[in-house]
Amino acid sequence: MLEHLLPYADTMFNSSQVRSLAKELDRLPTGSPLVPDVRDDLKRLCELTANGAHRQLWFFGD
Image (cartoon, rainbow, N blue to C red; front, side, top):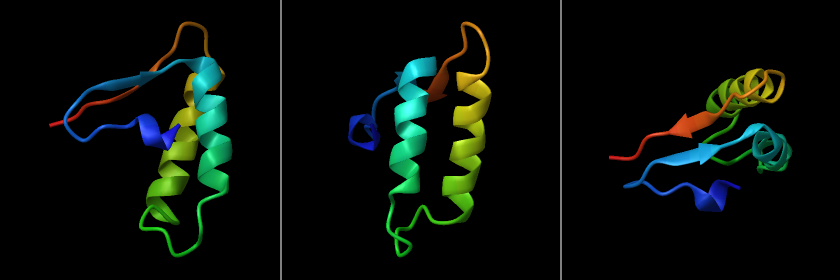
């Protein structure tokens, strides 16, 4: 799912997509620049999105 994030475009994940995104975040290597702080924040946002009706997680590009 991370491969679908584009730096110059907006990207939206629905509740089922954020479940896949959360699993992908768990597989990031510990040396990744997203680990641990940003990864943990993103996982919390994924959880909030997945546990609510009609929620979406948006990333806004430049």
